[in-house]
Length: 287
Image 1 (cartoon, one colour):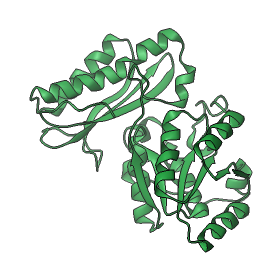
Image 2 (tube, rainbow, N blue to C red):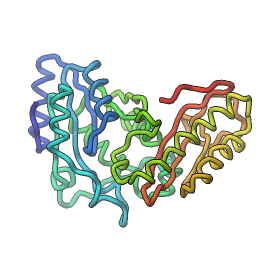
Image 3 (cartoon, one colour):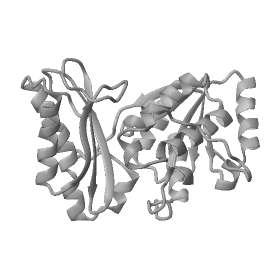
C-alpha cells in the first residue's frame, strides 16, 4: 500500500493503472475510520481493480466555532486499517496541497445545499462540494463510494457529478450501525456513556417513524411528530426531524411513496445525524 501526499504522484499512479486497463474505485474520507468507512472500501474492492482512499480533514466545510481543530485524527491507525482491507493507495494531502495560494473558485451546491444541514451550517456544503469536485478531478476514478448516513451530502455529490459531467459513477452504500442501533460516526468518539445512551433516541425516533408508517399513517407531519416525541422525551436538542422526498429533499405532506426520515440532534453539544428509508405500510429493517 502506498501513501501519497501530492496530486502529481496520485495522478501518475492512477495513469499507470489505466495503462494496465485497471478500473479505479475511490473512497473519500476525513479519517478517524470506523466500520462504516471500511464497508465503503470493501464495496470499492468488489467493484474496482485499484482502490484509492483519501484522508483529508477539509477545513472549508467547517464553520468558525465548529470542531475542525478537535476532529479526531488517527492517521497511523487509519493506515493500518486500510492496509488490512487491501486499499492500494492512500492519498493524504495537506491543506496547502488541496488549496493552493490564490485559489478563489468554489462550487455552489445548488438548492439541495440550502436546506437541512445547509441551513444549519451555512457554507458547509459549498466546502463539501468544492473538495469533492477537486478530489474527483484529481483521482478521476470510474466509481466513488459515499455512505448513506450523510444522505443530503450523497444527493449533492450525485447532482454535482451529473451536472458537471465529471464522469465518475457515484454509489451510495448502506448505513452501518453499532449493535445498539446507533449509526457509526467519527463524532461518536466525543460521547460519554450517558450521552451515548441518550443518543440512542435517534435510531429509536426513526423506528417510531417506521412504525407509524406501518400502521398506515399517511400524514407526513404526524410521522415527524412521532419522531420529535421520542427525541424530546430523551432531552435532545433537535435540529430537525423531517420526512422528505428522497430525490428533492422537499418535505412530504401526503405520505404515499417511499420517503426518507432525516434527523439532526445535539447530544451534550455533539451534533449527530441519521436517517432511514420509510415505506408506506411497511416497517423496514434498519440500514
